[in-house]
Image 1: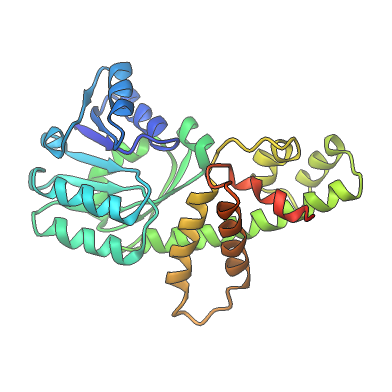
Image 2 (image 1 turned 135 degrees about the vertical axis):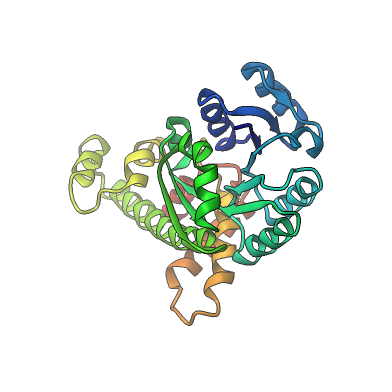
Length: 284
C-alpha cells in the first residue's frame, strides 16, 4: 500500500511520521511548501508540489484547517487518483462538506472516509488518537493499515457524515470541560490554594479529566504554547453550532464557549492554546 499525507501542522506532521514508520508513506504535501520539503527530506519521501504527485497513492489522508481547504484538495485529487483509491479526511468540517466530498469522489470511483480525530497533539505524537469514522465499512477496512499507524481506537460510526457528527459531540464536551476547568482553577488562584497539592487532588477524584491533567499545571504557569489553538477551537465550535442549530437542544455551554473563544481571538490569543481561556476567567 502507498499512502500520501496532506496537512503537516501540529497534528498532521506526527501522524505522517507514524505512517512512515509503518512503511506506507510515499508522499507528503502542505500549503506551505517548505514544511513539506523539510518533512520529506527528513523521512526520505516525495514532497508533493501538486495533486499529481499523489497519483500513485492507494490512500491519501488529509489533516487541514478549513472546509474550503478540504474541498480544494479533494477537487484536485479527484482528477488524478485512480479508481479504487481512498481519501481519508481527518479535518474537522461540517457534515454537509463531508457528504459533498464523498459524492464528488464517488463520481470518479474513489472512496471517502470522514474520520476526524481526538486526542490532541500528545495523541498524534504518541500514535494514540481516537478516530471516529463515517463512510462505507469496506472502505474503512481497506484504509485501516494507514489509520492503525496513529490510532489507539478506530470506531466506524456509520454512513458518511457520522464521523463529523461524532466530532461535533466531542467538541461540545471538550469545550464544556475547558470552561469548567479554567473557571475552577481561576477560583483556586483567588482562594490561594497550592497548585502542587491541588492538581493531583482534583485529578484523583471525580473532577479528573484529560484537560486538567495535560493543561492544568501549564495554564497556572501562564504557559499557553499549543496544543490546540484557540482559533481552531472557535472554528470547530462554530461548525458545531451549525450542526446543533436545528436539533432543538439547549446549547448554553456551547454558546458560552463560542463567545469566550471569539473574545480570545479578538484579544489576539488565537494562536495560543485553548487553556488561555483561564485569562478570561480570572476577570479584571
